[in-house]
Each structure stands twice: as C-alpha cells, then as structure tokens.
Amino acid sequence: MKTQTLTLTLTIVAALGAAPAFAQGRGVATPPVQGFDFTFTGPSAQTIQAIQEAAAAARAAAADAREQLTFAFAGRGWEWDQTADRDREAARAQREKDRETAEAQRERDRETSYYDQGQGALDSSRWDRAISYFDKTIELKGAKADAALYWKAYAQNKLGQRPESLGSINALLKDYPKSRYLSDAKALEVEVKRASSTPIDPAAETDEEMKILALNALQNSAPEEAVPMLQKVLQGTGSPKLKAQALFVLAQSNSPRARDVLVNIAKGNGNPDLQMRAVRYLGIHGGRESRAALAEIYGSSSDVDLKKRILSSFMVAGEKDRLLTAAQSEQNPDLRATAVQQLGVMGAHDELWSLYQKESSVDVKKQIIRAMFTGGSLSRLSELAKGEQNPELRLLAVRTRTCTRKRRPITSSSC
Image (cartoon, rainbow, N blue to C red; front, side, top):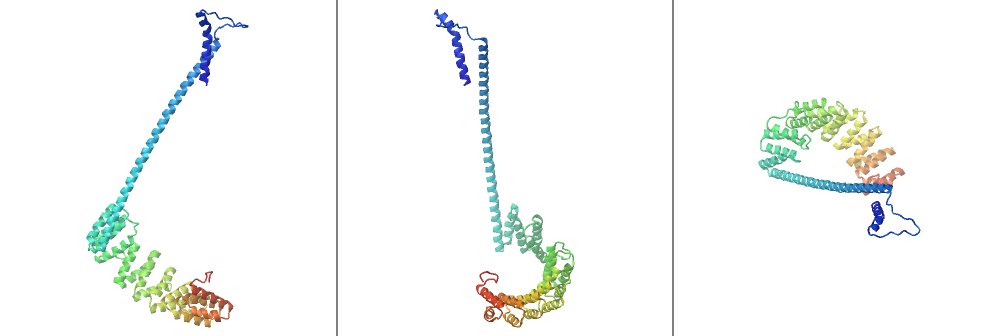
C-alpha cells in the first residue's frame, strides 16, 4: 500500500513539474486561471527530500522482503530434507529390526527341531543319535541349551560313557547355574558316580543337595552306614532344609537304629521343628513300635501343640482306640476336641456315637456333632435331629444333617 501511494505521489509531482515546460516547448501559452495567480515553480527542496527518503525506505523494505522470502523458502527446503532423512532412517531401522526378528525366529525353530529330534531319539533308545541332535541344540546356545546338556549327559550315561556324562553335567552346573535341570543333574551325577564305582562321599560333599542325594543313595545301598552320617547331619550346623531332608531320608529306613534316632528326636532331643516332623514321620512311616513310642511321648509331655500333632499322627496311623481314649480321658478341652475331630476325619461313626451317649458337656457334644458331619454320619445326625432333648443341640444336628445331604460346609448360609 505504501509502495502504491509513493508511486502515485511521484507521478503527480513529475507531471506538475513538467507541465509548464511542455507547454512552452509546444509554443502554447498557458493562460492564467481566472481568479488565481497560479505559477508552476516546481517542488520545494523539502518535498524532494521527503520523496527521496520515502523512495529509499521503499527500496530497503523491498530488499528486506526479498531476503526474508528467500530465507523462508531455503529453510522450508532444509526442513523437507531433514524429514526425508528421518523417514529413510526409520525405514532402514525397521527393515533391520524385521530382519533380526526373522533370523531369531529361524534360530528358535532350528533349535526346537534339533531338540525335538533328540527327544525322539531318546524315546527310541537311539542314544548316539540323541547326543548328536543335543550337540546341535547346545551349539545354538538358545533357551533349550541347558535341557540339551542334561539329556546329553543322560544319553551318555546310558551308553556307558561315564566320564563324558560327568563332563556334560559339570558344563550344565557351570554355564547354567539357574537352570531348572540342576536338581535332576545332581541326582544323575550321583547315579553316574555310583555306576562308575566312584560314589560320592557324603561326609566330604559341601553342596547340601549333593550331600543329601549321596546320603539317600547310601541309605539304599548300605543303611547301617548311612544312619550315623544322617544323625551327624541332624546334630550339626546345617540349614533347616538340609536337616529336614536328612530326617525324611532317615524316616524311610526300616533299620531299628534309624527308628531309634527318629524316636529320640520326637522326644525332644532336637529343635522343636525337627521334633514335630519326627512325630509326623513316625505316624506315617512307623509300625507298631513307632506308634507305641508316640503314645509314650503323649503321656509324658505337657506340650499341647506336641500332643495335638501326636493325635494327628494317630489318625494317620489308624489308631482309633488311642484317639477314643484321649477323647474320653483328656482333661484339656482343646485336646479332647482335637481327638474328637480326628475320629470324625477317620469316619469312626460308632466311636463318636458312643462318646456322645456318655458325654455330659454341651460344648463337647457340639464338637462330636461336627465330627459326625465331617465323617458323613447322616443316620446318627438324623437320630439326633429327631430325638435330642436339648434344643440347641437338636438345631445343630438338623443344620449339619442338611449340610451333609447337600454336601456343603456347615458355614454355608444355605444350610
């Protein structure tokens, strides 16, 4: 707008300045305007200076505009170049990623194929072929390398290649310390060494799992030699896990000496955790002598928790008579309730009915009704629901009978 105004002004000024000269050059007189004394004298110096300044400013503005426009187009072109570069780089990176993903998948597929063929060879007892496929699996160092090492050691042992089998086991233990095959590998190591006439010495073994595996192997082959070692472990400074495993191995033995050690620990000659385990093992694995030992411990102990554990062991061992005796004669209400409950678990319907007839305590009778429910004694519960004189006990019998028919717990709201 400024440029147009300036151009118009210059045109007018130039025209006004040139008019008298033009007229004179043509020989034409310029008559005066009526009523005015009008003479063309040309623009003043101030006007010319203003016009010159305006023209200079206009030229400067135009140059600045051209410069800004040029820079803007140049910058846009640079941005376009940068965007194109980024797009090309992203596309290249994605192609590289896709290539790596595809290659990794091919590696996994190849590993799975080798491993599955090795397993198939194991199923067919083709040990050499299995080792070959497992070697190929191991070379790929993928997710199945540790499993392949274990099964390679297994196949080598089957072929009688004891040193090679132990080498594969050692490679597994060293290279894959977090493998889920470690326990199996350690057990296999014990078997391989026993077969190669170089059994593991439990006393010299520092690894706890290996120690207990060696003791278990020794227990199977020479129980009289294993018992003193197991006893030493139980009396030593090993971890609770090691001692618990040693006690379990000891409980599997039919040796009288092993049973004596177990009974001794059940009597309290060991820490309380081992004592409770020993009581449970005597009920599970012990014979008549073990149950007699439990009854002796029950009679001599004042520890309620220990006695409850013994009552539970009596249930496991099928000792109805001992449980009935405790339910009839025990002075501690908790122990009487526990004995009644264990009779219910055993399904001792006649014993529970006999107890109910002789019992005078309402609370104990409630425990017996609940034990009848646990044992599924529907006929006895029906008798109580019809003939019990105590309203509270009769209501409980009705409710437990309903729950028994619906096979729902007593606490169910629908009973």
